[in-house]
Length: 310
Image 1 (cartoon, one colour):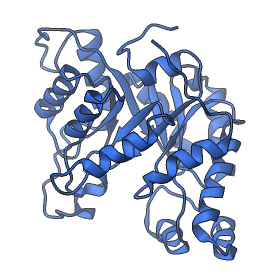
Image 2 (cartoon, rainbow, N blue to C red; image 1 turned 135 degrees about the vertical axis):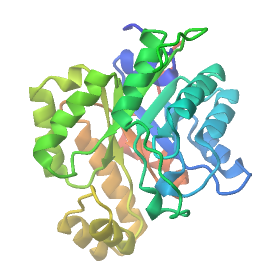
Image 3 (tube, rainbow, N blue to C red; image 1 turned 60 degrees about the horizontal axis):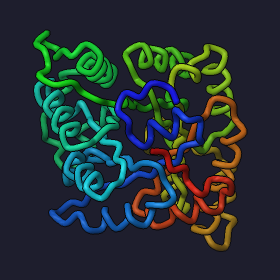
Image 4 (spheres, helix red, strand yellow; image 1 turned 120 degrees about the vertical axis):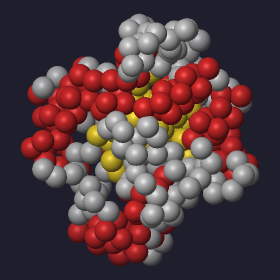
């Protein structure tokens, strides 16, 4: 096993060379975390860690740290999302300390969807740091025992630092360089944007492998099963950074059972991704369809049982 920085289950699975599987959970819009925890229990034997969204799509929800701590209490391994949209450097550092103090080991640094797109469009975006600076901040807190101010932490921080990459955003030529900058800042694992365009993904990964970035950071492929033609068309036409090829829409339109076909496509995507050099795992984002994650994992084949590492 390689040196562990947090000792989280996800870090152990990846450092031991296993193909990791993570699932995504979106906290509720009220005070009841019950449905979120039920989904987590349903996935318990099918994933290695749970990515907890942080006010996903800029919509107010239960804080990611609160949901992450509840998972820790149940012996599950959360990946605590942290957006720079809503916090300045004081609060970001405080939340890292708070999460780590309660047993959270994985921190995923993201920019977050712009506040004008969510439930509080008049909110003031903070953006004191960007996501890459957040990665460097956590790395310095962990490795140098130092806050941004230069003050010293009173106790050491354990953290496995995550981020996101998007092979489908433009300009394409810049995407691999942007990934390299995140690695330089300290990111240790990344999850990709939702994958539908396999040709562009393969070209991106070829460039990643050519630069050796896959040897410096664990890369998990982002998979979101499509439930309906309308959802596919909305993402195709309205969501920046996602490419849904016409053949994907055509296949879904031609299917008698759209949901079944969407799941079948997701399963096929994971099977293909396992053959692409550079990937070390898959991140399943079954938005509002979390109950299907175990089915997807079972149908891919070769992913069960999940490794148990002390």
